[in-house]
Length: 220
Image (cartoon, rainbow, N blue to C red; front, top):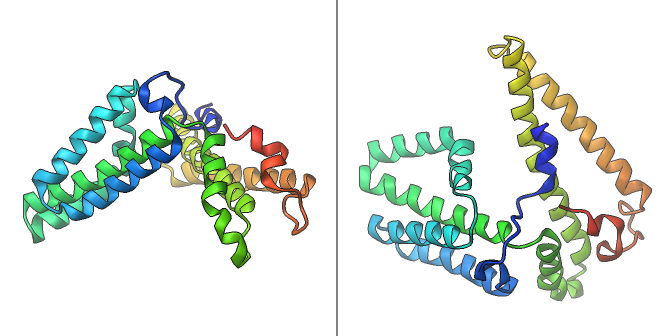
């Protein structure tokens, strides 16, 4: 089932220079993309940024079809933004907003697709370690990110699975047949995750750190 296949995460193995680049360099590039998107509000500048993001995506050897996944997932949201901005500010502004948004999304996807999940989590721990003096727990924060990276793809995949099952039974127009199984499956997944964390003592204040926990080596 595709919903369970999504649990494998978004990392794509490869030997490209983008894959071999250190996490710090890729994180700085992602930050730079966000800053440049804000600094270049016009359509020409953001179109260039979008082109750069697409070019880096291809240079990294990532499947071209991955470029369409955000569009398929956000198509309704994008249509609403385009229609509103086109009506209020014209086509140039509408395209500038969409181009900037997609450039940042593609840049973030390149980071996660070319970096193993465990490396990402180790980077989160390292980046938030200075906050320990204020009472923060970097390892629990990384655990939260890990659960998010696992849960969101699972839920999205569950929608795909249930939609296909409903269509096979001729119930594609039934909201109950398309929503209820997803809700039940999501609740069951959440309970199983909670039970697994509790069994390892990770839900308790005195639990073991994330980096040494069993889940830290099985996030992908």
